[in-house]
Image: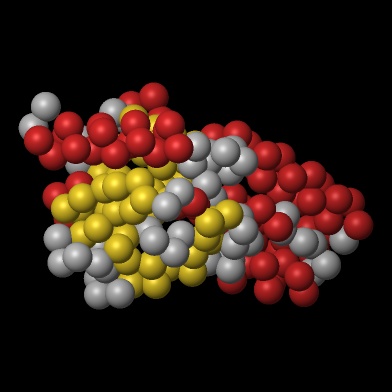
Length: 178
């Protein structure tokens, strides 16, 4: 996809707001831009070559043999699902019809929060850690995930330096064929 812009201010937020059910703020802001970025399923961090999580615990970036993926951390997914379940129960008690609609919308949001933004490793020429930011550069010299904003977190600037440098090293080992 050329300059694909994935922005999920979750269409559901509008529908849910109209029902006076509010999706937790953690689930309403997800934005990533990149030529090679695509939406994919959840990656199990234990299956990755390396998985690092932002210092605030909201986002995990994973390196597999074939992909680099960014997704809400398992802890964050659990937290948002818990809040969504609580909101659903409250709405069902207050208004059965609104509860049914809210349940469908919340179910859609719940499914989406457990997915990832991914990019094929073969499309990335280099990964570095510069100026406190993890930087992924595609084969055409363009940044990937550079403007990733998830749950009001500037993801690429939110990893501990040690973790970011481990990610760089592991990516370079993978590209070198180790």
